Amino acid sequence: MQIDFEKKEIQLKLVYYGPGLSGKTTNLVHIHRRTAPSSRGRLMTLETRDDRTLFFDLLPMQFESESGLLITIKLFTVPGQVIHNATRRLVLQGGDAVAFIADSRISETENNLKSFTNLKENLQDNGLDIKTIPLVIQFNKRDLPGIRSDAEIDALAAKGREPVYKAVAIQGIGVMETFLGLMELTWDRLDSWHDLTQKFSVQKDKLFENLHRQLMVEKP
Ligand SMILES: Nc1nc2c(ncn2[C@@H]2O[C@H](COP(=O)(O)OP(=O)(O)O)[C@@H](O)[C@H]2O)c(=O)[nH]1
Ligand SMILES: [Mg+2]
Image 1 (tube, rainbow, N blue to C red):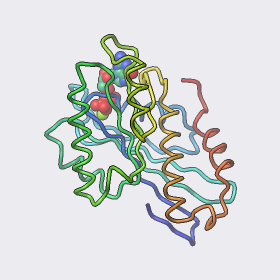
Image 2: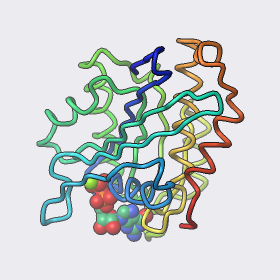
Image 3: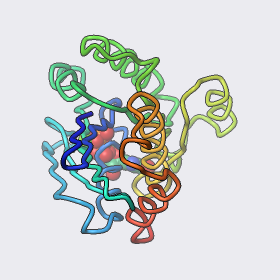
Image 4: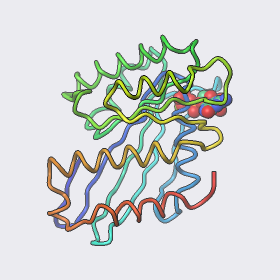
């Protein structure tokens, strides 16, 4: 995170991580679609012909709090395929928070696990820690057959510390919930480290009401 007291601005870098084709780009497309034009920049995506992200996607966003604090967000995705590890490590550099997008299908369990292990390693290589970085998990593709059951995911969620969301990103279901959950966790963590509430006289309730309004402009 970068803080600029003069300009009353904080800059956040949020990263959507996960195996190839789990739905990271689809999440960003929906966030972009539903965010007020005044709060979003251009969504930059780079797709190869087989539908996989070649490098990364980037969606810039910005929100203003009641008290005039400007929150600038850079939302990134990483390329999921094994060979693009250097890019993943680079995208994670200076990251403030991570949304891990898992594919709910049982056949993808191993890919999810590999990607999660890879996330841990790449965080560590960037001097970050999976135990302290704000992290939420999304189980996407709930519309497909052969998925892990709701009960199974609820059990996983109860065992771990991270908030878990279920989603059908192509229909926009669960996408904004995941993003807002990530924002809240990130705010709480950074606030406890840097005392943002005090320094910028921000009321969290009002900030998130505002955010909610700016993010739910259209129905999915
Ligand atoms: N059935 C289904 N397909 C999805 C869902 N989310 C994404 N997809 C599809 O999965 C493929 C990969 O999605 P994409 O967002 O490009 O994955 P990424 O590699 O993680 O960025 C695309 O064909 C999407 O349309 C979902 O919730 N359900
Ligand atoms: Mg992609």
